[in-house]
Amino acid sequence: MPIMKCKALVAAMSAALVVIPGAAFAGVKIGGMAQGEIGYWKDSSQGVVKSQGTNMLDNGRGRLWVEADQKLGYGLTGMAYYMLKVNTMGGNTGQSGFDQSPYAPTTSGAGEKYVGLKGGFGSLELGNIASPYKYTGGVMWDAFVTTDLQARGNGGMAAGVFGQNGFMMNSILYQSPVFSGFHVALAYSPENAGVNGSDPAAKLTAQHGDYAGALQWKAMGWSIFVARDHAGNAAGPTYKPYATPVGVGNGLVYAFPAGGSGNPTQLASAAQNNTKFGVKYNFGPVAVMGQVENLQTAGEANPTRDYFLGVDGAVGHWAPVLQLGDTTDKYWANSDLKVSYIAIGTFYNFKKGFSLYGGYRRTHITGASSVPVTVGASDGTQSVFSIGMRKVF
Image (cartoon, rainbow, N blue to C red; front, side):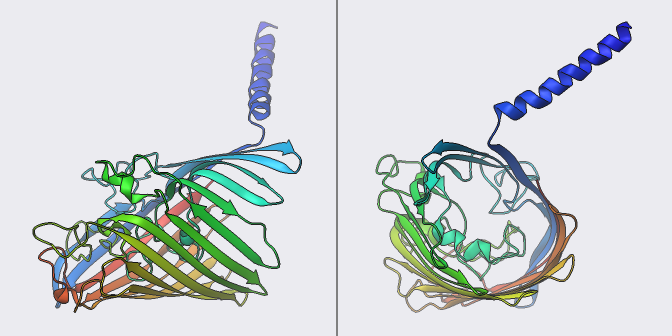
């Protein structure tokens, strides 16, 4: 009898622990993603191998989030969302031996965070928000985003906080309801304190006057959009499309340092205006999409343009992908830097939430010799073979 009573007590306590949290956390959802990737890369210039090796990466995919909604009456719902970027490989980019991707989070606090209100008027969010520029087309159309094969920063899409990576801090985001297929998203930062201090990271996110907006129409298999953003004080090249190719700590480079004695022609800070257009059509098992970005920084000779073309398929568990890109950069007078991008591979989706993927990427850079700087530029080709696995929960 004592043993039976003990078992009954344990069963009752277990039931209480199941029921009570469920009631205490009603309306709260917890989720996340984990990713592990092995990439082999080789950089070469004029047929000579400059560097090569194997990296294990997370590429900024790993994250945890908590989402809470509460019905308020009057057709309104209160919202809260908190994302933590978690590097599946462990460590940050500055720690030797860990994930060396430029997209690996430098802090666990990086990510989208907001409190908001939604209803028949749409939704309003305050916090560290997802830029309408980034999430219209952009990363939503790049099947390989957060992998070694991705388009952003590799010649197919602009990188940088006001390109296709990062979030807008100190900002307000409004999203309209969908009306006849049309959807509008607008983000603005009224923040005007603490952004011009000694901390360079403060200049890499939204500040007073920075904005992003997008208008998108979806109907009959079509998706057409136009997006624009403005950064009032772009600190150095972070806002430019230049980025060290993913997973490489040395070798092929087309990221340029900020101004200084060795590089007097590079602006240390300047206003930037980006405009993006995109069209996508879904044929059923195949979707074809194209996107063009025009990036204009104050003081540059000519705008930079990024072109992207993607083809996504779906055949049973398989999801093959082909992506092409081209970047033409004439930031400096009399310079003509070109970056071409191609990536091909496939995902194999098991049951919902788990997938394997693999593929090949080639990024080719020409015209770096015409750039009037003394450091940081080289022509060449980067070849990457990558395999990985991902879990969404």
